[in-house]
Image 1 (cartoon, helix red, strand yellow):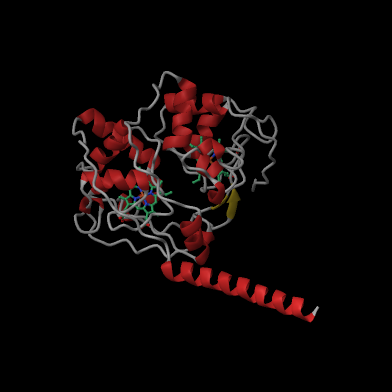
Image 2 (cartoon, helix red, strand yellow):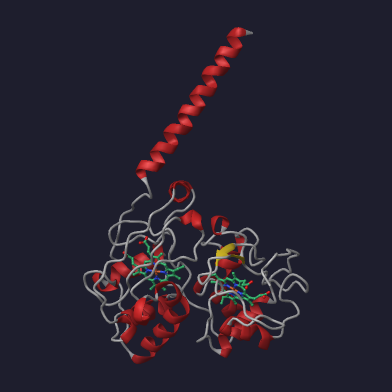
Length: 317
Ligand code: HEC
Ligand code: HEC
């Protein structure tokens, strides 16, 4: 009996030591680095692409990157959950030293697809856009190179993010950079409402990322496989008063989802943050003010097709 206990004691000690060694490894290694790459791309310069890029960047990038004076110079993101640690978005102005201007087109496209920065660092909050069509992604870069006033050079470095142990753990074990796509990625035509709505929800504006169960269980490569896909429950922080806000169930469930919402009510919520039945939604829900009627209609049509999920989300009213 004594011998068994002694063996057991050694075993437990060995396990504890292994866990401690693993934790120390993750702590000191931090977020792993990867091989940066510069891919071959031709960024368009025509006015249609620039306008398209401006529209998409306003919908997708501006909310996280808008800093002082309306410039896209980056900001501290107080609205991401605490477990990410201190998060500051990047300076994406044309500045050649500190902004997106220091990236070549090929480096920028590689980063935006994979999440691997030009210095090899892995961007674990903004993990990249694996589903945006080539045309859309290239137009965004065309816009970033344009002389739009929001992109006028701001010569100021963005303070580096400071990951918590939990984020380092996730970045070592769960999160991985996305592979660079081997083929051209095409968007469905906007006339195919359901397909286009799905494209926006999963691949561009990423409604699913906030509206599924948790950032830690999202599946960015196959969004529909995320835990609690679009059924709400993810905890966000309201940037104005730092309250915790649970995201809403966007499935067509008549009680817990948006099954009874009209398209007009939906549009008011998405564009202006209006709550159905009066009042305002928390600022944890971005206002997609520039979203066109066609885009809203496509998203609404797609949301009608996802399975109605009986997930009651307790939200601040
Ligand atoms: C959810 C918020 C969020 C969204 C949406 C977002 N970003 Fe970012 N972005 C960040 C954060 C946070 C960082 C800092 C990452 C880091 O340093 O690890 C960053 C960094 C960057 C950088 C700088 C990388 C470097 O090496 O310093 C570029 C360029 C960039 N983003 C471009 C974009 C573009 C273009 C879009 C839209 C297509 C976009 N971002 C959308 C949060 C976001
Ligand atoms: C950054 C995270 C985030 C993103 C991205 C986001 N949402 Fe939200 N959304 C929220 C949160 C949080 C709430 C709950 C706000 C509240 O309760 O006041 C919400 C609420 C809503 C509501 C109100 C639902 C209700 O029951 O009151 C609708 C509709 C909605 N979002 C649609 C969308 C659509 C469509 C997209 C993509 C175009 C989107 N959201 C993207 C965080 C987000």
